[in-house]
Amino acid sequence: MSPDGNNKLALVGAGIFILAIIGAQLTYIVRPGDRGVQVTLGKVSPNFKPEGIGFKPPFISSIRMMNIRQKTVQMKTTCISKDLQEIETVVNVLYRIPEESVVEIFQKFKGDPFVSLVYPRVDEALKEVTKERTAQNTVQQRDQVKASALEIARAKVGSLIYIADITLEDISLSTKLENAIEQKMVQEQNANKAIFAQDKARIDAQTKIIAAKGEADSIRIRGKALAENPAYIELQIVQTWNGKTPKVISGNQTGAELILPIKKRVLPVTSNEE
Image 1: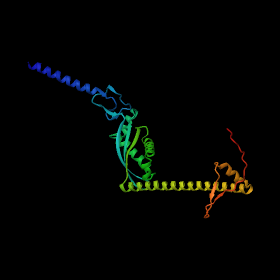
Image 2: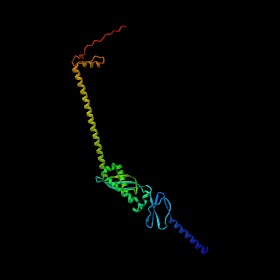
Image 3: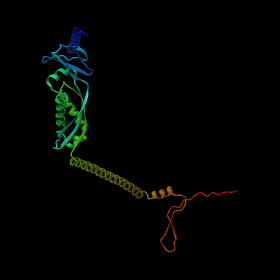
Image 4: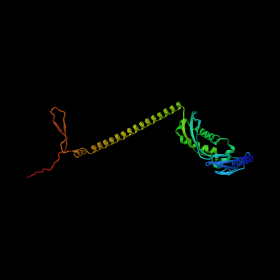
């Protein structure tokens, strides 16, 4: 191939390369789940770039990507309780960046929005909630701690970032404090058992008193009835008689039988004739 032909091929190749560079500089692509922030000569465009392909001024403009998908990030924080106990907490934070906030966050917060914006607010919220409770209550009322911390964190962050939820994965106390809390709970359970036993004994005693009073009243009424009407006992004997003459064996040597005193009653005599 002649030198002129080689020069033409080189020029064509260089032209294609330059066009490719210009084409790359003229266009941009925003991936799904991202939003683009355009920066032109150091100035940030007020509107975000949606998903898809777009055009921008070449060489003087760039597109920075901001992810708006919901994320879950784990964080650890150390809090001091109302009774001055140290509490280690492991928290999972679910958050996302609203698309209308991507430009403002890009301008005002450097680096990862979680590190610069979410983490400090959640940490502050947990510390505020924990300092109002004892270490034992913090452990026992973790649902209330979570709800209060979430509300405070959302108020601190505002509308810049949406905190969907926080979960308290673990709350760790010192071994000494955990043992003390466990002993206290055992003591409270034993105290409740003792109170229950005392209540039961008191109720049983009251029941016996009521029963004894009822029996005494019954005896008194029967005694009064006997005093006023001696024939009452004969009525009782007749009502409970089983058809046999009641007998009482005396304690004398002869062993004579004593018949209980009952008035003679004339019974009709019947005869059976065949």
